[in-house]
Length: 268
Ligand code: SF4
Ligand code: SF4
Image (tube, rainbow, N blue to C red; front, side, top):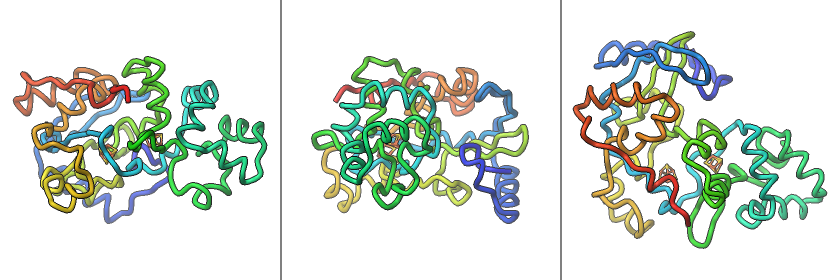
């Protein structure tokens, strides 16, 4: 058993038991899904998809919550290399590495092959999080996402370019051979997740707190919170297929609600 998007991170025997016990005591939806070109039996914590969320990422004033995504595909690397000037003006990653003594061709070679797009010795020491995390005017954004939007990429193209983990974050997927346990981290089950979900976008009470309103006076309006399956509908549909989304909506009596892409493809 392992986290689907962190295959190297092994789950302890104690946590394996906790996962099995948790899923045997809740209402689950059991369906086949196709993910990364393979068919799995998905066991879904269906009620967790009712959890109220508001992914107002363009109005979020924290650095990218994902921190380090572990895996960039060829498309992401090509988008960065094809837009190197914009990438550097957003992230300063190229300029900083030059100041650290690297030549432009070494930086380009690193973007092409290194796991985190920078030489390993600069992870933690020069960058404390993903090199694509950036500030544009007064907003914390993802440089890959922004460059894709500026180039009029569709939702599907953005998802195919960004690391999969970033696109589905903070949804958690645990793999046990051909079975996937899928759940939205909530107060009830977040102890089973590897992803940190202690954010205002996942916690409407937190978003209303005086402390948070002081920290972020522009985003996270209570009326924008929706069940996770609606907030994330189009992303989930693209990644898992419409059967996955329709079955969860049916099970939660949310057939009449539909999500939009506004919080995913806003030009800023
Ligand atoms: S997922 Fe939440 S914490 Fe992360 S950037 Fe979006 S709104 Fe902010
Ligand atoms: S690729 Fe973008 S969304 Fe993913 S960790 Fe980096 S900045 Fe965040």
